[in-house]
Each structure stands twice: as structure tokens, then as C-alpha cells.
Amino acid sequence: MTKMLQCISPVDGSVYAERPVLSPEAARAAVAATRAARKAWAARPLDERVALVQKAVARLGEINDDVTTELAWQMGRPVRYGGEFRGVNERTQYMAEIAREGLADIALEDSDTFRRFIRREPHGVVFVIAPWNYPYMTAINTIVPALIAGNAVVLKHATQTMLVGERLVQCFHEAGVPADVFQNLVLDHDTTEALIGEGAFDFINFTGSVAGGARIERAAAGTFTGLGLELGGKDPGYVMDDADLSAAIETLMDAAMYNAGQCCCGIERIYVHESLFDKFVEGAVAFARAYKLGNPLDSATTLGPMASKRFADTVRKQIADAVAAGATAHVPTFAEDDGGTYLTPQVLTGVTHDMEVMREESFGPVVGIMPVKDDEEALALMNDSPYGLTVSLWTSDPDRAEALGARLETGTVFMNRADYLDPGLCWTGCKNTGRGGSLSILGFHNLTRPKSYHLKKVTK
Image (cartoon, rainbow, N blue to C red; front, side):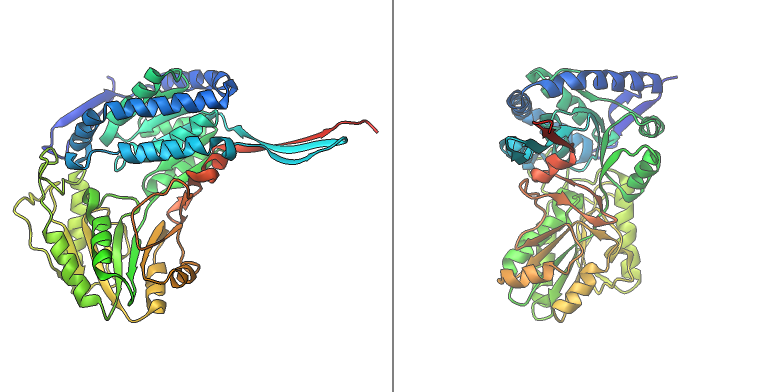
């Protein structure tokens, strides 16, 4: 009997989509077809590859209304926010603009005697394992530069957003990217790990949990396959004594609650200088209470359900455990909170780093806020985490932010903003957040390998 994967909609608990899992044999055949197609794709002129990728993303924009509705059903983001096309397009256009520079030869010498240079060559077949929380943007981070660089791509999307993979290949194929060059495969964990262990891919990019990243590493052990891993996060915000308080409240709370808190770089813990603490908490609580929790298909809804009851249960437990240990929950339970996927946004004070809600990833609409006396105390608390993706510093002094940033264990330091991916900067992390990096020129470097040429023009 064929195994089926199902997307259970957080909107109403219905089966929104289901697809049969490929057998190991069919999966191997599909990957082999992609490998056979990669050389012809890499041989196409760079400008042609860029144009086809841009055309594909433009096609995605043409169906954005349908895609936005599908996202609401699959993972619960309110339709009022318009999907992910703006971010997808911004990242695509930037990577297209820098492609020639990012893939250019590094010339060392071209004299009468020698020609010496380093060239970037595509890895071959890039395997993208994409998550459900930002299913288009996270996938595009690798798919676009990988194809532009001359790789072929196999995509395995999260079951929760299984239609996203289909939409992506639809648009790329309609734009003229050959079907075998970019494939979407429905795979279970066993077949995925078997393919990785067999060395079926030349580079793997995975975005997901720490446990998932560990499984990928174990599966790839001994194959020497390159890995890019973006895993967990517990990103902090720090509001200094000279911060613009109203701007800090609005930005940090939006970063904590947007997408029902299901953001890789969402703010999950906030440290506020003691002189501003009471006013910050007052504003944060008002911000959280103003959300309208409800059906994401309703244009009035500003906070939709979490993607699954299991995820919501984790957040509820973290909150309950923190309150039992002495924390204060400031937001009364909303009428729309059904004990399932629909969850009240919550602000906690009286929290400590002995509580799970301040140390382990919540990935939901909850944030703990602590007062600090100075930068040193804030630094110690921000670094007291097994993760390191982003930090958000709030101050009027960029030199102070840069100096503190140099001592922070993180991939990105923001000042006076949060929860944003700048395609010109490398998206990367440290500690249990993972390894590697996407976007920017370095994103092209991670999706290619260096090849050195040492050409001697004379024989004596």
C-alpha cells in the first residue's frame, strides 16, 4: 500500500492536501535524471540562466493571490499580509544582480609566462530541504542562487506546506527551466536519509530543527557532502537606556508575534535597561492585547493559528511552567483561544534563565522580558544560549552597538531593526543554529566550489 503524506490545516483540522510518497527506487531514478540534466544546464550562458530564474519568479508573482490563500490553509498565516512574494522577489533580483560578480573568476596573473586564476564551479545536484514557516522565502534562498550558479536542484518540502514545492516547480517549468533540472519530490524520512547516505547529492541545504540537522549530519557522515544548516534560534532583543522606546516596542513585539511567532529570526526574549523596563512592558502588553486572533482567511485577522496543535502545546507548556515557577503572564486568554492551534499571544515578566521559555526555542507567540542594569549584564544574558542567529540592539549610538556586537555570539547583529533578511548580507548562524550561509556573494560561494587554473604558456 502506498504511503501518503497529509497536510492537516491549522484553520479547521481538515486534510487540506495529501500526496503519495515516492518509493526509494522512484526517488533514485528522479535524482539520476536531475544529475543527467545538470551539465547541459551549467553549460548555458549565465545571462540565460538568470533570465529564466527571473521569469520563473515573476510567474510566481502572477499567482500570488492563490498562493497566499493556500498558505493560510496550510500553515495559518493571515491573508491580509499578502504572502511572501515581496521577499522572494527582493532576494531573487538581488542575487540576479550580483551573479556575475559573485561567480566571476579571481584573476591572479595573465602575463607572457602564466595565466593563473580561480574559477567557481557548480557543485552539481543541490538538495534543498525546506521548512513550513516561511516556505517560499527559505526555499528561494538556495534555489535561486543554486540554479543561477549552474546547479540542478532537488526540492523536498515540508509536509505542512507540500503545495509550495509544486507551485515552485510549476512556475520554474512554465518559465522554461527544464523539468529535470528542478524537481520537487515527496519523500519520507527513511528515503531521504538513504539518498543522503548514498551520496546522491553534491550539496545539501536544510532549514529546520536542531534534531533534524543532526539527522542530516549523521546520514551524510562519510560521504563528504557539503552541508548548509539553518537550525534553531532563541533570538534576543536588547533595549538600551538611550533607545527610542516606542520604536523598540513596536518593532520587537512585531518580531516576536508576527506569523504567530513562527519565525527563524523572531524575537523570543527581550532585555530592557531598568530605567525603561516598566514603560516597555506596559507598551508590549498593550501591543499583544491589540491582536485579533482568528481565521487567517478573514482579512480582519492579524494573528492566525499556529501551524499545528503540537507546536501550540509546546508553547502553552512553556508558559504554564514559567508561571508555576513565578513568572507573570500579562495577557488574559483570548475568547478565540481554542486550546488547539489558536493561541493567545503572551508577554511574560518575572522570568529567569532557569525557565525553558527563556532558554529553549518557543517558536510561538510568547516573549519573556527581563530588566538589566547595563550592557555587561545584557551581554551575558544574550550569550547565555545554545543558539546564535540574530540579535536586535536598540540604541542611538552605532559605535556602541558595533562594539557590543563584536562580543555577541550570533550570525547577524541588528541595530534598531529586527526580523529581516538583507539579501546583501550573508544569512548565517553559529553554535546550535547551524553552519554555512545563504544569500549575498558568499551564498554563491557556498553553492559552488573553487577550481584553480595554473597555465604556463612557455615550456622553459
